[in-house]
Image (cartoon, rainbow over all chains, first blue to last red):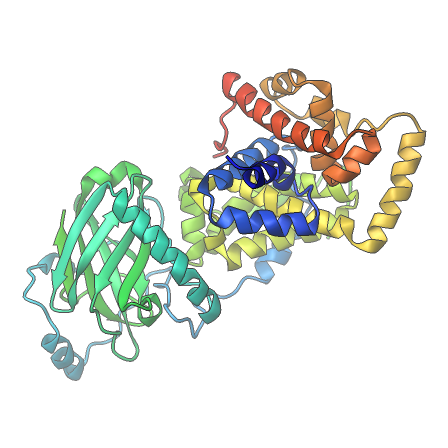
Amino acid sequence: MNDLYDEYTDLLGAYALDAVDPAEREAIELHLRSCPRCRAEVADHREVASFLSNTGGAAPDGVWDRIASELSPPAPPMRLAPVAPASPAPAAPTTSLDEARRARRGTRTALAVLAVAACIVAVLGFIAVGQSNRLDTLESALRDQSIERQANDAVANAELTVRMDGEAGSGEAVVAPSGQGYLILDGVAAPADGDVYQLWGKVDETILSLGTFGEASRTDDGRTIVPFTVDPSRLDDLELFAVTQERAPGVVASEQQAILAGTV
Amino acid sequence: MTRDDQPADPSSDRRERSVQAHVEGDLRETSDAGLVMAISRYHQDALAEAYRRHAGAVFGLARRLLADAALAEEIVQEVFLRLWNDPDKFDPGRGSLRSFLLAQCHGRSVDLLRSETSRRRREEKDLRRTAEGGYDLEREVWDLTLADHVREALDALPEPERQAIRLAYLGGHTYREVASMLDEPEGTVKSRIRSGLKRLRVEFAAAGVGLGDWT
């Protein structure tokens, strides 16, 4: 440990309680970006502090109503990587042209399971999306670097690594023991206009949407990195990952063949 | 809409029901991390459930810091709208949702406190309080509302550490301000805050206080 490091660590308690000056705060935040150990300590301090104030009671009447009135609608337009709709929406009608287009980029990967209309999307619970798809362009660009770093960390500490292959390209899905997963693909082209890719996971007999992605998930080096989250207690039950191409903003149950898939 | 500052609000039952009406049965069983995932998929019900679980604590902390119920309501609103707009900022690997929300609330409240006008006002109030005999910050909060084992852990803390943490966290003072209030060296106060928080963590663990377990 050097002196400078000690100077930072000495301030971590005060920093966690917002009890430092702005200049100190800035310096510590810069240090925290590259120091997981200090980040963990700050998180610990904040956890402890969360017990120190009045935990009883409720917020006054009317506050929730004001919050609810300001919530954005469920599916805001013009997102780079739209989220699948929260409530089941009818899939877009498939025209014969669509069918022809999709057949061309279809895959021989045997994944008829995905064609089952009875797929259930887990809205909550076992598996859900934890994607960066609610960020605007700038934030998304800033975040890419950290996603790359996190994905590399996840590869190094993966609990589960699944090779993904298909006509769209290749890559792997890695999942850390925490349930944080990353889909890392090479050479996957951007989805067609108005389409998104959708990642699926199969747990027991249920196929769950793990989120949608598109051009915004591509990194500078041409890879595509998509974060997702899996309930860590269900890791053993995971059977396969698959990717389909869907009309934006994604579907509740896919009728497409997988363009990429990998079995656990 | 009431901005009643009294804790025994007769409309609280009605409010609880109206928030509940937004909450589906399943969400009651969902972990905080699961709620945030649902929020990232624009589930308003999940936000309502997160609000039901944590808004009281957020409001309590903001009001404690700002001594102003109307401002505290604004902080609650801001904290939950921020969660809605930026759910990715919460990382379940780095602590509980409650501590995340309270940290946001604390940071925002302290920013407000330190804005010029309110700082002047507060300094006058501090002077009055000091003159009235000792700056025993919110003793009643610590004594009455915390569970027994949390209070025991607090009692086990050396008084100088407890005092420094109180003034910084519940008083919203910087460690430099705390040092000057207590007439102690800044370095000492800085170290006490950190060692006190570390000690509390150990005490909480020994007393079986489930850090991060709020669902």
